Length: 147
Image 1 (tube, one colour):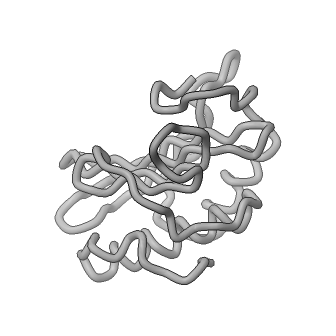
Image 2: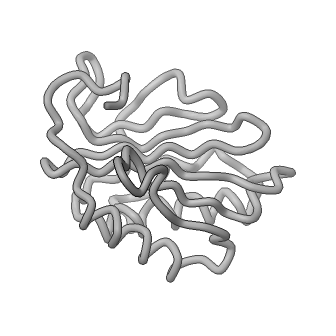
Image 3: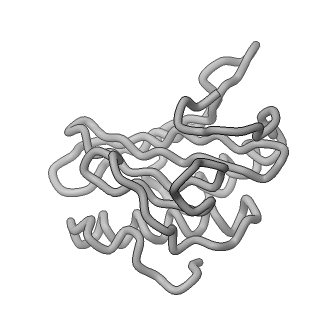
């Protein structure tokens, strides 16, 4: 379980994660690899992208989607740029929240309000793609209910 999550979120939803993997691969030709961290006992889906924001040459998404509909989508890259879109219980932050770059230390209301795996995937990808193309992470959490 993610140490940031407080409360019962249930077990992983493997079917939702497989759909997210298919969506990410279809959305972006830069996806190098997409699969579970373990075939026998998966704890997350990992999406490896063959480029990154700014001068990063790669980035990775570690994705957890739970049967309750809660999720955590964590971005990291070779330069230590971390941010995360989350929907789960946690005291003192909204259930839908965004952990800001560069280190994902603080949390604020997420601009992503949809809860369907396909729509959340498209929203995260769209926001990442904008930051990737501009080299600017200041608007990662700026959109009106994407996608």
